[in-house]
Image (spheres, rainbow, N blue to C red):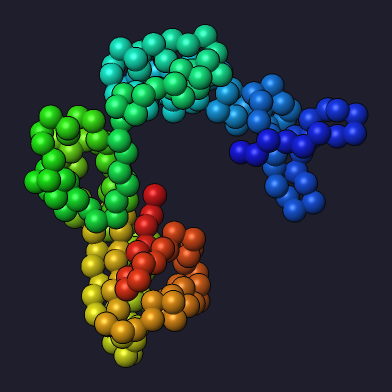
Length: 218
């Protein structure tokens, strides 16, 4: 969501520009205001119903339930945002996003005192799961249809001599590909992406590190 520009007459332009970008911000802007975080429509997040998605987003930062409830009850989205922006660092939930699957939970449990666990929220790419260190993600044994196809393509490339050392599927939403030591991931990136495109697969969810590539589906 981008803030819209103003026309010469001072009115907001909430229509697509020459590049097709839709710009809007306030909930009362036509015709896209209903897509704004500020638009008043009930949103359920972690079992609690909020008056707007902005309320849910801001309240999700609060570590203490009482503070979360206070932000939830803010009369306007702007006031909810102001309240959340004023939280001290020790009153804010720590968020960690990881593509390592359940192993990150095990490592954090070993490294952190149990009293700190409730303060940390995890987001696991592979399972589309959000929870806390003390919770256990539901186990999944089946890959998504996209990743079944992707794994088949990558395995075929490996058989043709592409220097892939590891293909690891983490159901249901992640496929990890590691290359031989010394091989440029930058170069292999184009090989994998081209193979996916040739097969009609979406490539926007592929990310890479120094030696690996990850395919995520959400």
